[in-house]
Length: 293
Image 1 (cartoon, rainbow, N blue to C red):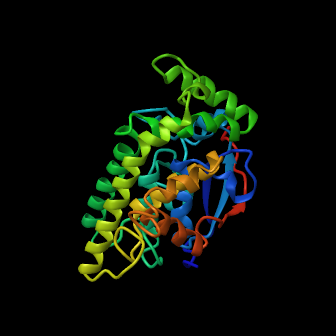
Image 2: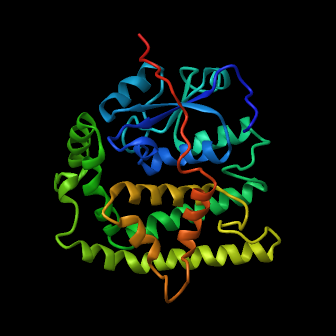
């Protein structure tokens, strides 16, 4: 375990669901932080927050509204010891990438980092891989990746969270459709549209692994071979999201390309590595911080 540097453990704020145990963590956004904490072997406490309570909690600690997207979102970490004087309100840092940089700086001797050295190269790799995961898997497939996932989210949330999610996401949809209406009439249309994009990402991941091995980074399942980085964490976060959505989505997604292009898909290799290391199932100690008065 990474040596604790502070009196208080980092406190991680995640989004509530009604899924059991460690499966309660489902959001690809918050999972980027959770999986990084686990891979870095940082001791932490955790708290699940229902969607309608996120804004009031963050506001009470002086967290400013986001300039884009929804004003107040998770993940966030609460850690006054390391954040005092560095963030508005001195206590909470939100945004998964800002959190990743903060954790990398706090724990330079951790076994893994979001942005390993050379940092400029790993940051460029993150930009490239994130763009592909967003555009290839989701946008280039005409949004069919989201159609596979979005209708399932209200079904896994706590009741208050589900009601809030449907109301706010419907308002952001051009036709004011509820997320439960965002799926295609035939789910096979979504899978057919997504498959070429998933194959493309498998090919990209395979190429990056081969390049990493040729550069002496070692043979391994990640974008940099044996070296974990933020792009791998984001892919694993999406895979957990697929698992949470249920009905075999994760297995079908990872199986794309197997039997013809690969014996085991590169995407599945990443999942297996996270599972083997225990990064998917590790949890923090439960703790609750309350709104400031």
